[in-house]
Image (cartoon, rainbow, N blue to C red; front, side, top):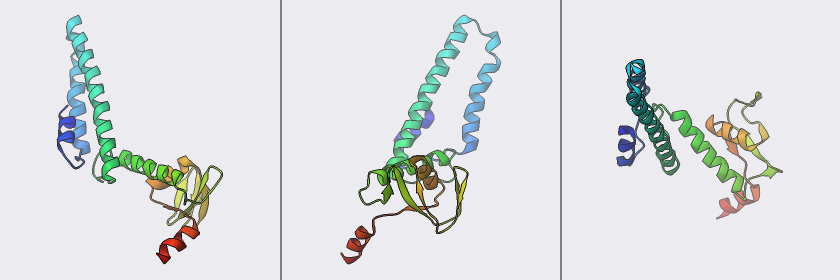
Length: 161
């Protein structure tokens, strides 16, 4: 609950170090060690508290996802940095899919790699151009492998303007 309160009060995405998360998890897990000594009311209370904790976790994740989307940046030392990168990669993939200037063939998007990247068991090297599915685009985005290609006619218009 404290993490949610901190997240909501902060305009920036709060950092949740791995050590802090482990401390919270350990505190909750310690409560399980004495479960055999609890009576029925105590066990019911523990179950209710755990259900409430799971609801709080769900809310915390939703708030953090919204902040990832709104701020479009991820703290590298936060416990959920990879999740944040996934969220932003999914956002950019959505933008790419709906963009009228993205080069595509059927349901796949043309993508140019600027570094070596392994996606779906296939290795792509710097300078490679490939048709990628939506999932492959998300993975390429998370790994920061390159960028989708846009219609050259649009580039000409932009460069003349």
